[in-house]
Length: 583
Image 1: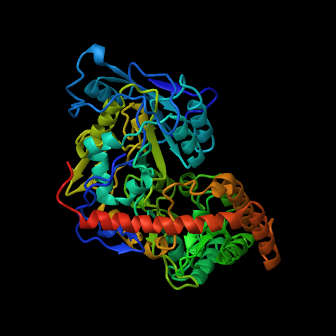
Image 2: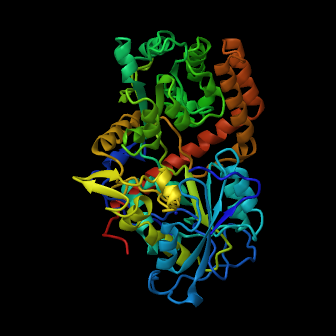
Image 3: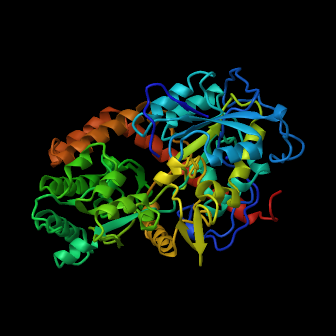
């Protein structure tokens, strides 16, 4: 069944120590594993936090003090979640918060999971990106609304509160026993689980989705280049010239002044990555570190003033669709057309990309192509690197009386074969595979999936695979992801990743105000309402210092130095003491 939150519209889409690390061809750069070189890693790095939903006999008694200790002890023997719980008396009720992917109730996939694991699933459907976080807070505000599995993104302060209040279950023991999800992350990048683990080794949050090392690239309309007899740009300056031509020279040939050089996701500074990456040590919201080991707040680095000025100039000249400063969706804007440059997903290259399917339905003679990142002032073109840590997490909450069973179910559900079936359906019925090429019969994001209530993409972002389980990636798309990842490592080495997002009290107290002030100023600069001259920039920095940025940076430097030492010790301990696979 599915629960709709009142007044909400329906959306349309690691206390254990680290064990042995068995590895091949590891390379460490600045204390950080390079994802492309990891073959087999971390026999037992414990992973993330809570999970699925509420089973039958859920415990509504609140716990307190750093995670829920009032949970059943680990069973003597591992569970067989398919065969150990037969019979109506063993049926579990499982409530799960979901937002992305498939959200209709009683789908074919949902019923298959219910029958296989003897559970009843209740989907607590969140609204879209604008209101989803507030609804997550509402769900977690009382035991009668708290789902057995809660999913969230970018809610670091909320997570810290839930953990301290005892709302979340430590799943580290379960993760060592049921290992599909753990082994996947250790294979792809063991640092993912490092960042999900508390200082004492507990795991309250399970990584839900971790991007490829980099998952975006620069796209351009090849048909517009051809129409205007232009070549693909190789520098930031040439990119601006192409954007001007796309805006002013009627590239679609319809005689109307209706085209723009660039557009992307509204209110998202990733849109301006081609200009950002041209200057070192700057970022739109993350902390950075320079080659002397000094920590900066990216939006306050002097180089931020430079790329902001360039982007503001392009916007003022009309080369960027003005909708970029409003809350627009890149997929929808892409499908509509009307612009010729964007920085967006490598997955657009797949034949099942609904965004491109929609675009080509309206523009059959058009052609979007990925191109190499353009060179900026630093002369080192780099793609936007993703974090090793997850961008979204999920957790098992205190309302579940048998979290081991729940975790074991979720882990089994995400084994390679089971994942492929839940995500893509049945071969021959929902897709075909010929010579390793996936062709959808019913696409996971298609109208047919909804109309037939199949349930493809159910539990999207509550653990996603980017390995061979992602059968939709063609060979060309995989090569595009690999290239983007390889071309982002220099920039990744300039970024700081915190194990604890609230790494210092000063940041916990002031981070929201600092971040909000930075975003407000930067967007105002782009839109032409704020001063980007030296005088205006200095006033902006003073305003951030007024919110405590200087104290934050002092604390950040101390925490960063300690974190780097901890990572080096971790790498050393787990590469020098390997005695075989963990049990």
